[in-house]
Image (cartoon, rainbow, N blue to C red; front, side, top):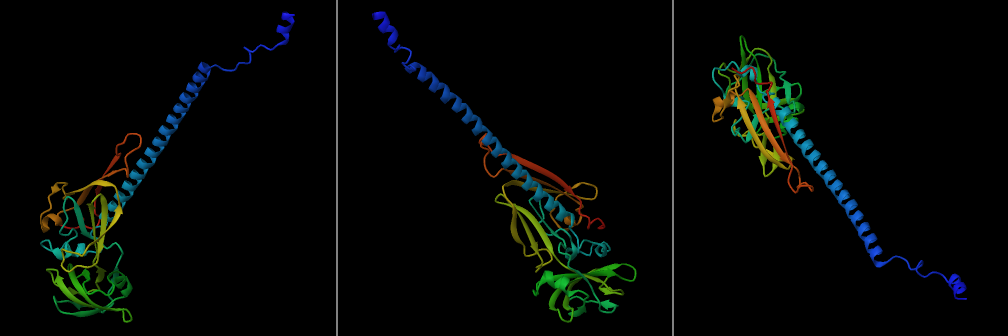
Amino acid sequence: MSEALSKAMPDRRQDSGFSLLELSIAMAITVGMGAVVFTLLFQNQNLFRDRNLTIEMQQSARAVASMMADEIRMAGQGVPAFAASMDTTAVESVQTFLNGTDADTIVFRAGVRNGIAAITSPPPLAYLVLTPTTVAVDDVAAISGIVGDNTDRFVFLWGQTAGSWTWVRARIDAIDRRADTIALTPVAIAAGGGTFPRVPNINAEEALAYRLNSGNIQRATSGAFTTPTAPALRYATVGGNFTALSFVYRDISNNVVTVTNLDDRAAIRRVDFTLAAQTAEALPSTGNFATFQIEMTVYPRNIQIYR
């Protein structure tokens, strides 16, 4: 009887489920595996963020360095360099590198907007310092598009003389767009005089500058020269998160030029610059900022003919 009853009744030990110890072990394993997966995902996310920050920094630094190199290479464009090479001494009025150029900042003349026209007044043409005159040009818009209607803008006139080259730096007094004429007052003339037996060119005077300010690379342009050495520069930021910008200048023999005066600036043939950047924020994986440095050598192509 008891044996038959025992066979008929279920075994409660087989249906009792997991013990507390078994549940604890299973939960510990699950939590451990979850922690490992979470850690791996977090690390991968940090590495992904590290890579994005680093790539963004490098691309920004390369873009700014490339722009700077391209424009420094244009230094002297639009300046009567060939004519000025006939002068016996350096002349501030036609100097490519301007006052303010040093190890931290570079300021230079460069016609980046191609403000050039041809004078159509019949030659010979003679100009005297502080003697107003009016010239006709073939494309007054090329000049007015840069200088506007401002009277503190200047132009260069330069071209061939009987046996050499000469130049004139003149202040713009007025522009007549309908008549394609420009009223000028010469303020500086080459030592050889300001007479052109042939038609000279006319260029709008422009300046460029670069500097580092509060972690930002700033670029300035100007067409306003109240004095030959002090253009009215208006800086605008072209890149952020930079830690250093330095310039080294070299002469035709690759000797370092310490820029202190006009003759030093006139001797510059090569510009080396170093640009250092850092990531916009600390890398999540290390808590530190990644850095990147670029060194570039530039030969301005429009000043090689200077003495």
